[in-house]
Length: 105
Length: 166
Image 1: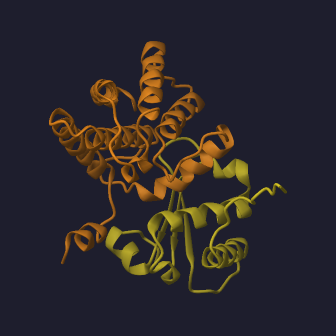
Image 2: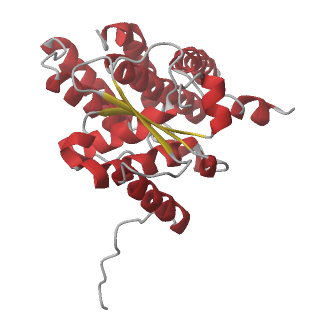
Image 3: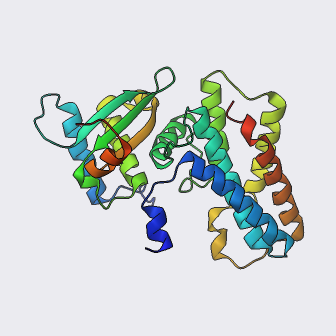
């Protein structure tokens, strides 16, 4: 009987698209796009970082999946080593960001 | 508005986890003492999972009102590099969380005292051999010795949990 290795579980096509869009915006410091808005905040300790992404496109996507998409995009943008400093990766719609008082405007 | 809508309207915080851990623990003890072995173990294991998460994120600097969910993917990313053999099991694995806590503390050169870390590892591994999230899909086959063991180990974890993030 032939034995086949299954590839690792891949993100959904929607998650993949969001990640790619996020990477493009992250790399383009001259972007004029209104969203996504990416905020990088120093954490409480040493090199720790908190990353917030405010984006209408998060609507309907569970919080943990948003966080995983942000981490995947972060790794593509900055590399694996720097990603070890991220303690919080949070995706919010503008309404959610307003309610939590995230200063993105 | 129904319970699910009410709860999902607000993301869970570290404080929620601490309170829920205590509630699940008390409920687990009641069920176990009433003879509902699998249900008791199930809730006691959940409490253990939450105490380990709370300790891990408190050590990372999180406080009561901080949200849990944005910290899960960064934790997974961290351990994927530091201990790639550890599978998060949808963020429910006790082995994953104790390993996360240990590697985070080691990286900060702030390891737990040897006696505490040795016993923590020993007890969490023992709970891990009995409890896992998927057990809810199985009929009750738990042995009385397993209920007792989980009860003792989770009770110990409850007692030391305030020390795990310091």
